[in-house]
Image 1 (cartoon, rainbow, N blue to C red):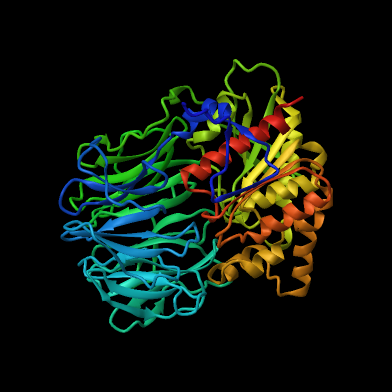
Image 2: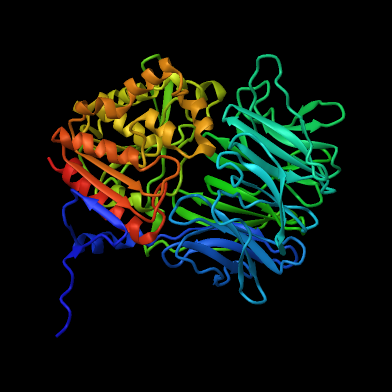
Length: 631
């Protein structure tokens, strides 16, 4: 007898679903095409051949693949149940590559070596601590990386020759979890490193590889707090190209001369934040991107003349992962736009020819019909202008459209026009408008704006959403009576805060890996990031600040939540511990409000495995249909 088709989609064994009504198999069939988007990102150029390693997903998780030439078939090299994070060829012979992966999203990444000759995978780190993947020396004989193995909280520097795992050694001890190596000097005798205190305050240090001694390159200047976001040695080793907001509201590209201690600013003509920078192997060209009104614009600087070279136009979107081939001719990068999922490209800087290396699948959907983002602005309570990006559904949906407000995490993040992937279903099939605000505290708008929500100013960003609700009410095509608020991480806190303050103005809220109590969050987040978060939110050990944090925490205002709530979390989340979800679910349920709860035992700070992401998507659509769309 043939098997009877399942009528319901049930959560897999790693998912705990509570309060979620049965999900029909027909819903899954309806949305199936929107679950089949793939993406690809550049991991590493082969140092000799014109081929590369990329990251993409064919099964349940992203793995390392090899691509031999533009649009060649992707050859999968790693096969793990957990996603693999990046990869980098040994930079001389390329007989192996180094990659990272964690377990269940816990972010305690370990480094491994993959040997091409045998396919053997060798563990390079201790197996338990949190490790960065590291940066290769120019000679290809060492990598410098950070690890918390000594104390669990401090990101010390280690050196290793990956071909000889026994060479692994502690190079330099530090205090705090905000330390990162940025690069090696051309002679491999020095390492430039960043000490990250907050997004507004960082320092650059120079380490002597032979002794481990360090020198502070960027001491405080008077009362100015400065952020350095990137640094790379010049080819002659006499200075650094840095990205900094020194004496500026925005991040600028500058050359810092070691001997004179003088900064020469190279991008005064660009009134936006400079982001990624990458110097060619011969030191003659510096590629960099600027965040211009939310879009990434690629630039190419001739280091000898200080002049920019003209480049062919790229689609409006995000450009990241700049990576030079050692031929000094091919610049690789990943590009994503509203109508194109992330894919890998290269630019021949001698001819201006752009080549596409991957063409990721889009579930058979014609993405050319997907809506583009529209920049919108509104005035907040203090007359400050706040902005965001609005995606309107197709014109065939008539009448006032319901709205999903989706608030980014960080809080120092920024929503930028991008490929919405699965979220296009809400636009194209349900006729829901999607609005992504960049409230105060978001990056990309200058360092003053970035600090407007710090400490005791925390709820001013929540008031920006109140002003957005007012703005929506003035729009003839948006329905202010049908609004749902959602967000992930800090955005999860924001969705809970909006539900407590303006519960009578929304239909429902969705909290994804969000903070419900700032005090318990700060006490329970992993030690390597605790002090970094105290700079942003406030120090819960101070009695006055502790009381303030408790006063504004959604858990202590949960009695005001009037509308249905959906809480989604990963059991292994090291950033926002699961307890933040458990306590808000329990408290709101005690108040008699419907709460849907989805927890993944094999995920961390957000879902990454396709089977889990799919079920989250099905459940979220059902929640939207039930609580936003019904009249």
